[in-house]
Image (cartoon, rainbow, N blue to C red; front, side, top):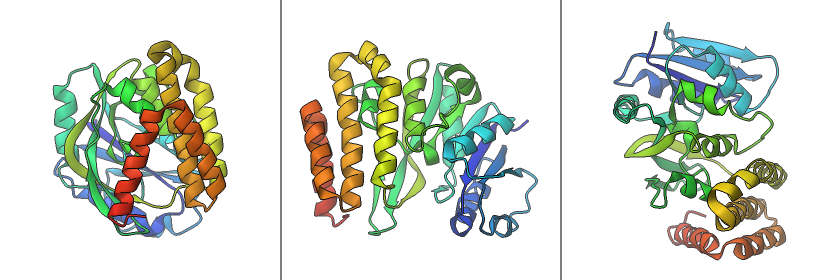
Length: 291
């Protein structure tokens, strides 16, 4: 039995999935299985995968497109290893990613349910690149109220048992299914982020505002009562501000400036400190030309 099951969901990314798979093949840690889940693609995924004749590679296929959460859940259901790693089909790993992360999660003991890593963010539109080192001065349950800024789609390594304990990814969420899962995880397990850049995340434009709007409101409906009970009114206001900022960002990217302003105003009313942190980051991106 392998020690790590790597799950790569793919939908019409034959042009980039080879880069992701090649980065797995180049790992210094070799005790893994790779499960590529074809989520109803209609491009030449088979041709892209033909370049990797490795017995550790399996391909699962959905008859129709069901979304990233469903693809990852199919991979989890087929996984044999006690550890599960996620890799998006347009991202890549550095060569020592698995070796360093497996060592860290095993040293952390059974309470450490999942571990992410620092990562290099490359924006496909602007070409800007920066290294990000997620940390949690307030503790991860509180820090995750600000958003899913750890890029679990490319950096997550989790104990497979966690999916049995806290549940699989929510397939009804079109976005933020990883954020939803981490909010559930930190109620039952410890979580951490290894402060080493071990993955490269290639970030494109945000999805359409309508998708983000529905996903943020669905996420709030799922977690409002739990966050309110665990983190109090201030914690719930911070979560709601973060969700409003997601809507503002998506509206701005789509040229919906009035909607962006309304969502930003809502976030400000909900939590001024959270909104100011968002604006500082936005100003930093503007200053280096990453807009």
